[in-house]
Image (cartoon, helix red, strand yellow):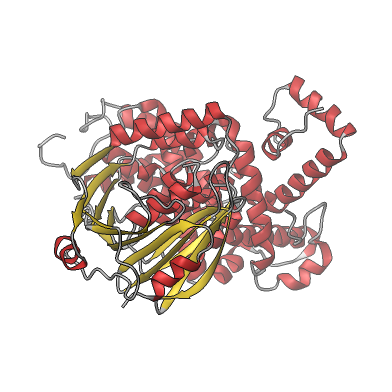
Amino acid sequence: MRCYSDGEWRAELDGAVDAAEAEAMRRHRQACRRCQQRRDRLAANASLAEPLAAPEPAADSGDPAAALAAVLARAARPEPPAPRRAWLWIPAGAAAVLLLFALVPSARTWAANVLAMLRIRQVTVVSVNPPELSPASRRQVGALVREMIAQQVTVTIHPGAPRIAASSRQARQWAGFAVRLPLGVAAPARIAVRGQSAFQMTLDRARLNAILAAVGRPDLRLPANANGALVAVNIPPSVVAAYGACGAHPRPVAGCTLLREVPSPTISVPPSLDLNALAQIGLQAAGMSAGEAAAFCRTVNWRSTLVIPIPEAESTYSEIPIDGVHGIVVRFAPHGRQPRSYALSWVRDGVIYSIRGQGGAAQGLALANALP
Amino acid sequence: MSSKATPAAWSASTAAPGWAPGEFEALFTAHYPRLAARLRLLAGERAEDVAQEAFVRLFRHPPPRREQIAAWLHRVAGRAAIDLLRRQQRQDKYERAAAREAPAAVGPDAEQAALAAERRTRARACLARLPRRQAQLLWLRYAGGSYQEIAHSLGVRVNSVGAMLARAEAAFARAYPRTPAPPGASVRQGKSMTGGNGGSNALL
């Protein structure tokens, strides 16, 4: 016996289903108490809004011919100049990127990618419950995202291959900011400096809506004015210092801890782009209810806050004092072959720091607290 | 866009840039009355002003696809009307709107009319508290739009409308208890506010 969704019951209440389906639904709710209660709840909510349908007091409807003449007269006046399309320099502007990241399956990838890209003054975490996707759906989403990136993203500054600095001083020279490395610990096995990068992305509403549909949320739609919006991201040079036994290509595996530093990237978006609305869509796609997404977005200053979406099933997080500021520690549960791991993140003096490693966060915390 | 000087006023019968002769007038005749009527729910006495402004925009920027015009008009005008409603709410014109709408309570019919006006005013104020897209959805639905019209206006699939409506009405139900009743309503509310499954309970 298939139960019907809220959307289907609501359509049935409005008579927006065909007769055969309506009859099937009627028989179903006679046998299914849960669906009957669901329908009753929807009907009760709708009854509160019913006064909106009440006819307005009779008003002078005016003469249509006079209205047309008024329209044509107004249309003949000089059109006010369109607001200058001044770019809003938004230090965080996480919404469009958050939307993309919300759809990437791996929490670890999310955290790493987000930490590498966004400009912030503080960090916060939001726990989400992303939809379970079948392997086919995941492949479809991946293909759509790759196609969108190929078509809509233009890299304007290529970072080039990372350069290996011989010392922290050289790293500072290449990176162009005050790179800080822990004192009183073994020297890093490697200090890599990644060059500046920049890209632009033209939001394609149809493609993004298709991605939302592919993750099972065809009801979520980007605002119309998001279509064609140009988002420009500029990421300053960054530094990754690898500690421990990291090998030639350092990754946060057993015995290897990575310290990453990057000055806050800058994201510029058109002023008309409703970042809050985009963020809410992203959060809903990542599993939040509309109410939860709205409530969360009310607490976030998108201009200055990095929001890291963390799947609640795979991780826990808490705020911690670190390096003299408030930061976040995310602990990832073992996942498949991957053992437990952690990620620390904080912002200090406009630089985003992250430390990633396996096991508990003690070693990472030690590195962080050894920073000058 | 033509480089000719703009006349003092366009004539509906001549060809304006982007429009064939008489085309705009035909669209206006077809869509304006219904749009203006529907906008009264949101904009009250400014409904025609909002509707006319939408047509001014349409005239200046004719879309290439004429079959989308009704949806476009509802989207543009609805957005403007909701923004207007929100501004009015913020400017504390709520009391004035209630005073204009609520007739003097004389006799049972007038009492009912006053109650209906108060419910409508409160519902409108509650609408202003919702995210714009939800407010637009509820407006389209309760202004008599079909699921097809709603879907076209909002740029969504028809089979998404039910789910969106369920969520919007849940949000409306949550916001309703926090929406102040219009002045003078407290006395009348005690009499007959809880008809059916309504009332001010937040039913989620």
